[in-house]
Image (cartoon, rainbow, N blue to C red; front, top):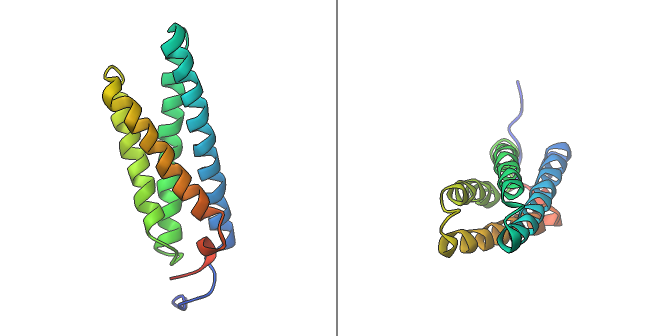
Length: 132
């Protein structure tokens, strides 16, 4: 019979490392999408590429949610990164619907960067490995 996890200790290193890699990929995808956005606004030629990069951001967010929940629930790690990851997914979904309204699309993009930066800093900090 499996023993329940004891308070304190470490989150599974493999699970945490997987989350770290996905969060890093998410941050990179956001930077790429933002660079295409600037080019799309300037010339319009990169608009389709920006949309495709946004889809990659959205798909990576799904993987990130799954891993963040696994770190939180069975791994007994922090729970807020799972909520932030869900927020990334929801704000990313909003981006698909507000692409014609820059008054919402641009602030949502800034919110995406803020959320991924918070999760990225946490994921690579020693605090991420501690159980709650």
